[in-house]
Length: 92
Image 1 (cartoon, one colour):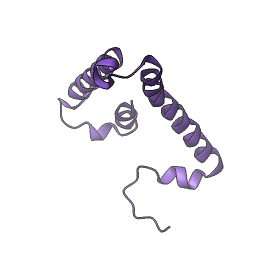
Image 2 (spheres, one colour):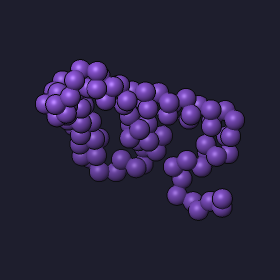
Image 3 (cartoon, one colour):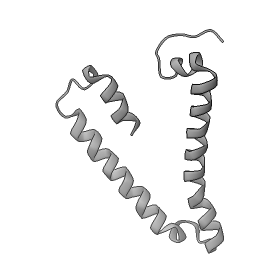
Image 4 (cartoon, helix red, strand yellow):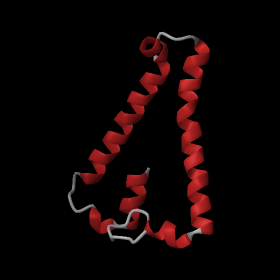
């Protein structure tokens, strides 16, 4: 998702003709791996159902917390948000 947004905002970055198809293929494969891990979590942990549920729910909870934090920074500290992802050196 982040790579797609980056390429949409910076179309000049996709100079190689294989960049977009390989990015899409890697995203699909990563989704497949995560799906297989989620479906077979008990084989990895040998834990009870509650522990496996907690382990699986950590990822979306952290993802949503990151989205909320990003929106807060975007709204309350736009100068900091504008610096995210830049290659410039910033004074702290």
